[in-house]
Length: 66
Image (cartoon, rainbow, N blue to C red; front, side, top):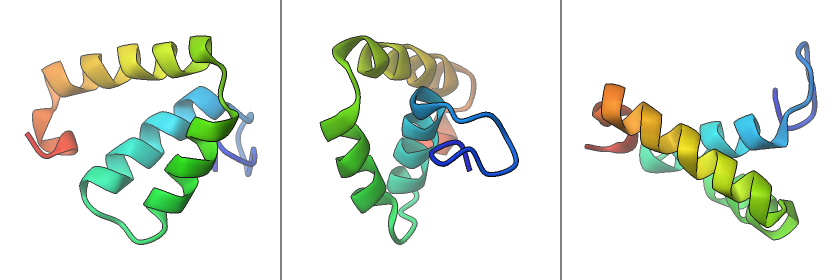
């Protein structure tokens, strides 16, 4: 939804966060989306994604397989 702005404002950083969570589960198709985003995102966008994922992992480690 965040990747294409479907029903919500498009946000590639948040899309990358959710694709990473989906990949950790693993959910089919997440790897392809994650690969595409990592090729397209700027270094700043990737850094922001990592910051968000770090916070998620602190509060909800089960979301990322912890």
